[in-house]
Image (cartoon, rainbow, N blue to C red):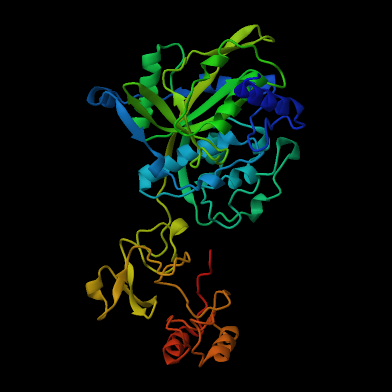
Length: 465
């Protein structure tokens, strides 16, 4: 009887071999297949990169045992963290390092745009693969990162491959305001080659204990090696541990060998249980609801593959990070909340300055009076300072226009028409919807009229995200 695990790996290998696109090892699980010149350039970029500074104080004050987990610094949706068929794993991992750094420096968690680089990078298309140096080159040139939530900035290249040559999303169509200023960025090498295993492990741990994400790029030599990793990813769960040592010493096969990059954001090092916590960019599986996997901490960091064209060995695993400094975020109304994630970008409702609001039925409506505490507001009013959003639609209570029924950004005759058509209805709860039942009491009566008249003529209504 054929072993089921062997059969699964065999099938995956056949899929890889029959693939028509050199960048897609399996549908939804792409790997980078660089030519020899590109492969050597990527490796050389690691070797020539500045070495990360090891914090000696951390080494003496902490034995690095126990665990570290930087996942809480990321704002991500596991199912949307998927590169699809695009070979830009290097960018997802590098962007993750940036997101952790921004959260640590500013206290703000935001998801940065992948599409911004896919659409705006000059030179080779991002779906054709890359290295951490390419992240550095892009942001050194633009000097700014933008939020995933900016107009047209969400990832849209999941169906693309290297052969497409470019994204269908033009660079000019992506809204770059608001943005996060990048003052400086440099890719750094974490020393794991030519040192013993303990030193390699402690160097990676040191970076993670500095609250910095780690970019991990690795190469596997042939279809069989990749089949092993695919089987692990697809069929194992998030508590399983992957050890890549099975691939050490194998010969690179053109058309089969390839690379992949992931984000390492923590570790567990306890007796009998030692691993790196890695976040992939291949979405989720039934056993991986968070898109995570574990890498054996006691792997061979000196693992190599043999390049027959060069007649020499190359290291298989590369650990890097970014030395990045962000500027202060833009905050138009000075409320202490960055515009990029402010649900009322033109009305104060942040930790430094808020807006008084009154409760009317089921809604909370801003009065336009600024405040720093509830004591500065009228009787029964509250001070909105925490991005409050009573109806959960993504627009803060301090600035929402409840009478903007058509979502046009203003309260004008079209909204008046809706209100007049529904005025007097008493069946809004049993026979929804009544758009004009603003206070949520089930009818459209004078209470709703009062709110409508107060908002009529507004032209600054935030629209639904």
